[in-house]
Amino acid sequence: MAAAGAISVPLWISTSTSTKITACNTKSRISYPLKLSRNGLYPLSTFDRNDKYEQHFTLKAASSSSVESTEYTEEPATKVKFQRSLSLPGCSTSLSLLGTGYREKVFAIIGVKVYAAGLYVNESVFSRLDAWRGRSAVEIQQDPSLFNVIFEANLEKSLRIVLVRDIDGKTFWDALDEAISPRIKSPTADDKSALSTFRGVFQGKPLEKETSIFLTWIDPTKLLVSLSFDGMPSSVDATIESTNVAAALFDVFLGGDPVSPTLKASVAKGLEAALK
Image (cartoon, rainbow, N blue to C red; front, top):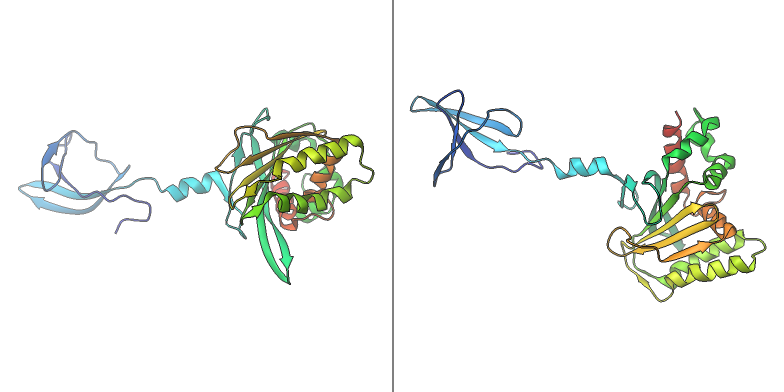
């Protein structure tokens, strides 16, 4: 039996000379030069027929799962797969995945997973974190100054949220606003306008399972919001220009009381590995 991921193609290979072999099936005979090697051709059995050696081969294709594993990281609790590198609208370079996690809401004592999330960063940020080289993930996770440096760096970073259940846009925004607004102590007119723009992205939109929401910090003062219902976004749905709103949103996920502890813990592990 062929291994998983292989395509089995029965062939009779007759080696009449050292430079040419003949492949045929039971219905028609086609002769063409081939090079005998184990790069894609795997002999299963050999027969001696009419003074020629004939072998039955399996032609093996590359396993799609092995290719996929090199390009994606799976968030273990939700099984959502995150690309390890993203190119997003408004970003000057591709961003690399630093960690993944999930958001859970409790209803009547039962925890319900709402979405998975992955944090992507411009890898240039690591050069600004030399003071934390050699630190453990636990030490990194407990040090708010490191996350402040990441936020304040004038480099792009993005949070990709992938819904694991259907939810209407108003409900999603209400939950997000419930976390953002208390973190803005004295909102200015610009902050209120930014929150209104932010809200408008989600109002009246049914957000189905597998919808992706991209929250991309271009710099500490500007946030881009993009929705995608079938893969990667092709455009920006809203630009939020407010340092307070941008900082509050970053704190929601990577501050002292994150809405997804699993995401922050995973990001800390990613930083530990990057800063060895």
